[in-house]
Amino acid sequence: MTTTTVADNPEKSRYEIISDGDLAGFAEYNRHENEIAFIHTEIDPRFGGQGLGGVLARAALDDARTHELVVLPYCPFIRGWLTKHPEYHDLVPAAQHERFGL
Image 1 (cartoon, helix red, strand yellow):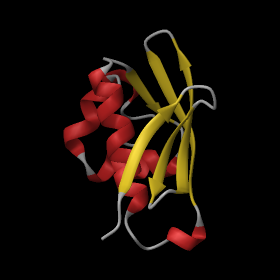
Image 2 (cartoon, helix red, strand yellow):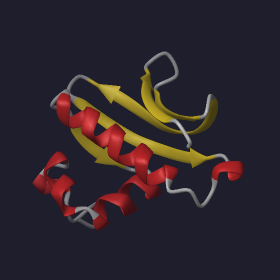
Image 3 (cartoon, one colour):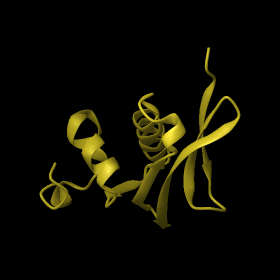
Image 4 (cartoon, one colour):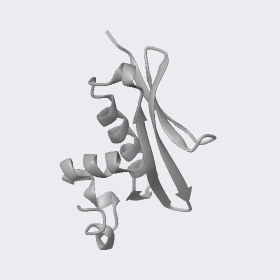
C-alpha cells in the first residue's frame, strides 16, 4: 500500500506531494497577505496516472480554506481541477469566476 502525504513547503513556495518517501510532485504558488495564487503544478512522470495531481490539488485548496485564503488559480491544472469541483468555487472571488472559467 502506498503512503502519500501533502505538505506546504513555504521556503520553496509550494505544496509538495510525497509518495512512499519520494517527491512525486508540487504545486507552486505566490502568496501575498490573504491571497494565494497557484502558478504551476507538476507531477513527476514516474508517478503519472495515479491520481496524485488531484490529491495534491485538493489538499492545497483545503489548506487554503483552512487559512481563509483567497485563491487565484492561474495554474491550468488547478483551474481545471476547480472546474470539476464546484464545491471549491467559493475559494475564488465571485468577481474572478468568469476570468478563470468557473
